[in-house]
Image (cartoon, rainbow, N blue to C red; front, side, top):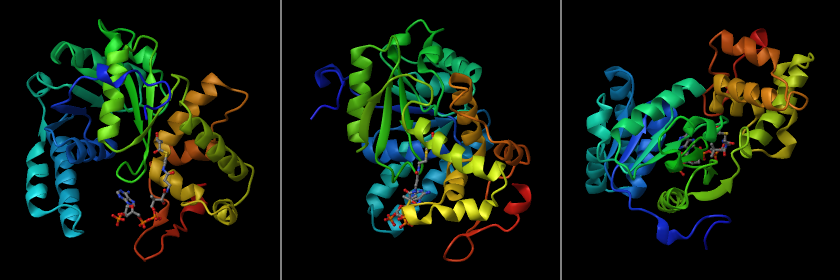
Length: 302
Ligand code: 3HC
């Protein structure tokens, strides 16, 4: 069944090569997913060789893990490793790419610049996708000659496990690009939903409101360990602070900032979250033992 609002699937174009801009944690997870499900060449690029090597190395390690778990056989593991490569040369790497997705730093100017660079090197028919968490896809595409090929393709962490994919139709996205995005989503085995190009789309809008209330109680003086444990009766798969660690405090802070700008009366930006980001703290839980424990140092920071 065609997802609600998706155009006729006969308009979809084939995707035989994928480009990923960025080689960070999100981008590397995307490279693994695209290679595994589409079985086409996937090229990761970043700003320096070290990052590219780290990204490709991570993907290859994950393929080894899949082999160990018996999820892929040796032959498939070898093929997947050969499919995922890295490059610093976008012009050469993406000259024959059909679908390029960016997962770089969440800043409009940087993302617009990445799209402008991509437009100069990819083929006419190539889709330019963004994994942005909260920024306007329409604005990101606004300076391009062909904004009709830009789509939002927003994944959730951990990408390999969570089934949802928000597909964003920007103001000028055309039906063929959107149909291609939905065809790719189907091959990735994701549950794709079409969402409006609104600040933080749907999921992050709700998640940020939820996290904002939890962080608000901490800002008002509730100890972090109390606020973190208080929701246990709801049976969520992760506690709020575990989720904050998974999402990344800098990303959560950024999304809260975007939503505060759009809806100042509904979204606050937690002072504590700002302080944690400024301190560069990324991990809140100790994972050494079987069961993760909240890091006791956290209460000093919050
Ligand atoms: N990466 C890859 N695979 C992972 C993983 C990770 N980080 N974490 C867990 N997995 C895999 C495990 O390997 C296991 O796979 P297997 O069956 O092949 O062995 C499977 O997931 C289940 O793992 P576990 O049994 O260890 O753990 P849980 O049952 O507790 O599930 C979870 C882990 C799926 C991460 C679950 O805790 C969960 O759903 N948490 C909430 C995550 C969430 O809400 N994410 C959304 C964040 S918002 C976002 O990403 C948007 C962005 O824009 C901010």
